Amino acid sequence: MIYYQIGNFDLKIIKNIYFIGIGGIGMSGIAEIMKNLGYKVTGSDQHKNSNVLRLRRLGIKIFIGHHPSNVENTSLIVYSSAISKNNPEIRKAIELNIPVISRSEMLKELMRMKRTITVAGSHGKTTTVSLIAEILDKAKLDPTVINGGIINSYGSNTKLGKSDLMLVETDESDGSFSFLPSFGGVITSIDNEHIDFYGSKRKLIDSFHSYIKNISPFGFLAVSEKDKNIQSILKNFKSLNIYKYGFNSSSDIQAKIIKKNKDGIIFDVEIKNSNKKNSFIRNINFPLLGNHNIENALAAISVCINFNINRSIIKESLESFQGVKRRLTKIFDKDDIIFYDDYAHHPTEIRELLGGVSNSYKEKKILCIFQPHRVSRLNDLKNEFCYSFKNASFVVLCPVYKAGENLKLNLDYYKFAKQISKKSKVQVFLVNNQYELAKFLKQFLNKENIAIGMGAGSISSWIKELPKLMKK
Image (cartoon, rainbow, N blue to C red; front, side, top):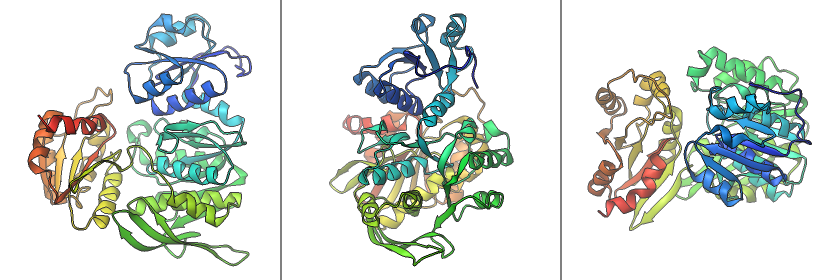
């Protein structure tokens, strides 16, 4: 939605761009791209975070807090989906006749300049984008990349490339992804996520239908073969070039697992061709854990075969992949005590992650530290959460990270913990803050356990401070 706009703005005559909510992962990526394109970029955010600090190092002036005077002498305002239309900086911009557009509108303007591949879905988008970027870079196709997480090999979630290719992680949380024009697309999954925005699962699925309609008929779509929600809408797109990936023989791009260990997974891939002999990529030594990450790799392969990338480059790229920040990031490994940090915050993500880790660390018990993210998600999926921890031995339940939501929690938190214990058959412990967490870990963390911090809120900063707190 555009709150206010004077005619049709033209990026060629825009000089100064101001981003409201610049510290968000999507906003920070676009801000960095615009800075690298030569625009003067400034912005504001309510809090100082790692994205704010990274952009400041690039020379971008960022205000902490939203004040009307910040937007003076600005040519264009871009706002995050988390920003209210009553924001004082937006109100001042309207008063000054400054064009005000959403992040998705800004992204759409960027995408008009490029041949764009978009990655959509409830889970796995960030890792999939990162894997595609790794392969395209190795093949010297040099795409522009806007991702939803920090790609370790970049040290950023974005890169300005010199080619006509652009790679974008979409955001389905506000429905805007369904209007983005794409040359090629990926749908990793469609799960019960952001139902608070859509109102029903049917409307969520309809938004993915709209997303597919905006893919070029000359392009392609790669989809998970096992996802029933995706398959239910494909029958409406008979003429589109569709690749199904997965583990079943019916998949166009099929994985066959050879071996799993704590260092990753070795697997083969068969690429089926209707007009010629099938091709193979054999013995890929993939440095990520879990079948869900193999599916992310298959999605990346499905995209890259459309650009005729040599199979040896695809294999090399997957094997050398350095990962994504907060996607099972190992933050501590000393004296056989291992600690990971992960972004998992949905029941499906938790279940897949714990399953992958338990298959690779068979000799270890998993100690899961979970911080629920958003009251709305917990209210909607409380029953699904209770069954998600079956591959853990211990669950430490932290307070809910509300993410700015002013909603009532429709459950008794103590009873919720008891239900997790009963339905996932795990021991559950409640802590009130990071200091109680540190005390708990001093007692329970040992060589027999592997610890994983999970959540999309402040849990990552808690985890990073644990070594210092545990010494006290």
